Length: 399
Image (cartoon, rainbow, N blue to C red; front, side, top):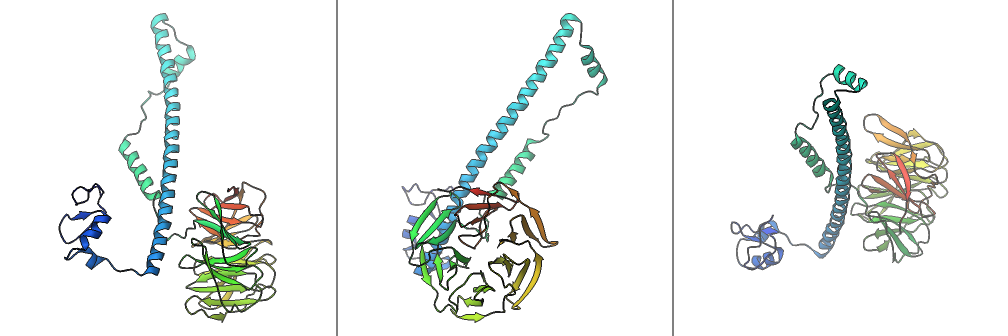
């Protein structure tokens, strides 16, 4: 909206319109003043009071979107600059070729006019070929429309996308975050005795359920604020395995060493047993795929799908020995990327590797997603980025 605020002398642009009077437009500051007056204001019918906890959560979501919008703007500027450079380069090249053709035919014409002669091969080509025609875009408006559709469909916020702003792990009582837009690393002290890699899964409200690998310590972590709260009465002392959240239930499933097959209710704070995991060897990894939990194992070939509704496991795919990474509809192994196709089931694609050094022993077992990329960080703290469109991975540097 390009109108100016209805208050005399205010030069701010309109952000809110009140229903109490036609064309009664205000900036936020003067709207607050306006609704204090007696009357049937917009605030009475469309606004609601918000509690401190709700306000904090809403502001956090707004801040998240502000960061995303800033990132979209920077990508738009970068894309625009590259597009202009590309168009300029191409048009200069075409113009140079056209100038060369102009010089060529002008020279032939002058040679005929001044000398009455022509190169034999040139004459045969001109006399034997079909008459040339012009090829230019018939309608530039159609090209503009296509570009306009492209820009509007690409550079925007997409509701419901499971995006992550930061990759993180915890070591030596420090929350280590890598911003996935700027690739900048930061540290913040947290009150948790986690000193090594972590198992984790993302919760519906955006926090993470976190377990220190090889221990029974579990926490709820707010990555934005760095606040961490312990989960009481974890059923086992040691744990290494799959953690996944579906319908406000956190599942901890593991068939190795001290088997743990439990689910934790975020609502009731209670632990409940689930069916025994069929994987019995070391290094269980997995994640949510659609409404089920995919489980894999370093030493076993079969991948299993656990259905929380039926409390049953089903083998569905044979994989090679080695680490597997699961998340967002993909299973990544050391050589293949498996992608779920709704019609054809699972399809495998060979990697296009940019870096040969790829270790899947992760600092955090959760697979982070930003745009078309999946991110994971190995035990050497090398950050890998997997391109879900080109099926290639590379190590990305951060500072």
